[in-house]
Length: 125
Image (cartoon, rainbow, N blue to C red; front, side):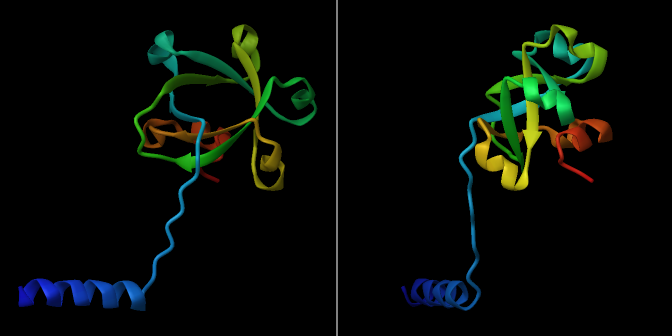
């Protein structure tokens, strides 16, 4: 009993001395990004547009980062000529422009993606 009390006291003192801030964001989709042969069964093909082309987008998405959630949708992100048959046109927004985002998404498999795809999703510089 005395040991348990001591452990609780130490934990409480540690938590008080070094508070940590945890933040969680609500996301609309935990996305598994797919490409190549794995994209054949994708739930959605999304054309990523920017610049003047963004005038015609269907939605604006904010990529809030990487998450460990189980994915609830598989998305193939495409650009250029590959996007002719896309189901949806999306502009990826961040910063102050993310205030008007239609959806917040997180990427569940960022470590499996190519560097180009990570850059397009703004997961790396």
